[in-house]
Length: 134
Image (cartoon, rainbow, N blue to C red; front, side):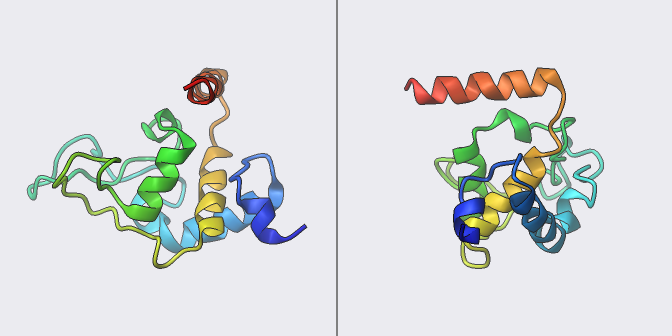
């Protein structure tokens, strides 16, 4: 099976996808979001420039509250509409010109592989079910 097929779905249960995602995350995300997905200190408090620090991607943050499609869109296009209000200012860059779709899905698979509590997994399953019925 081709690598793009394996990672295209961002499946956090696929070891190849997660391994590739770990490398993509380390090279492109960890500088802001933390090597252990911990985010920047005081990530909920605005900086003097009005922007928010990078949030954690572990279960202590809000990343897991977003659908896979939204997470992919934010990573590829940045925090722009429809993923953020018009003129929203953020230090989150768009990675669409730097990473392939497969690499973005792999990074998301790596992040999602760290969401393991029943509460988070149940909430994500419900979110997925609701998205399919719309």
